[in-house]
Image 1 (cartoon, one colour):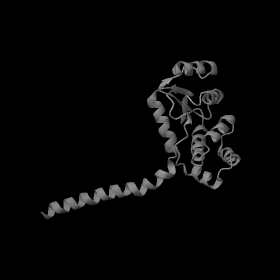
Image 2: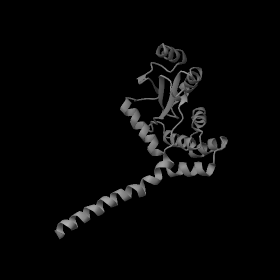
Image 3: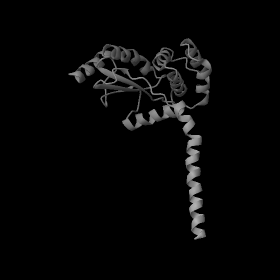
Image 4: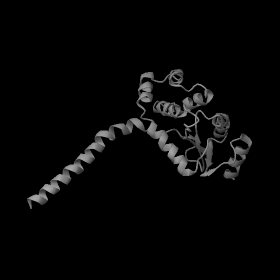
Length: 198
């Protein structure tokens, strides 16, 4: 009986230790790490756009004005969500830029910060990223601490994995109601939106 009690006590301690370590090491990081990104347009719209993009990708930079124009033109009829897909093998600054955008998101400036990144694709070093935060009047101490911690990396890598699972192999990839659009060129893109609305 004593042997059985010792065994139960041992496993009880192990289980408590595992649960305790979860709360010690995971729980404090959660609220400070995940801030939902804004859904642009109409979040309740039947037409849903999801873009996987890389801030250093030239094609993403070229597509960005068309995407913004579409979202503005159809803002009552579409929802638009941006997701990170940094291709670090050819874009060495893309990962950090994506993490910086998430840090800006904590302060309610994800869209504005992303616009600055796409407008300055050749200047995405750490010093540049901080300058853009200053230009948007973000709390610089908080921004620097966030960027320096690397804690946003898990969000970026998580979205990257989501993209892979959805079949993304290059950027930009824009899904319209779950299916990739044929082209991000404005005229073709607009026609696909009109077709979906009809």
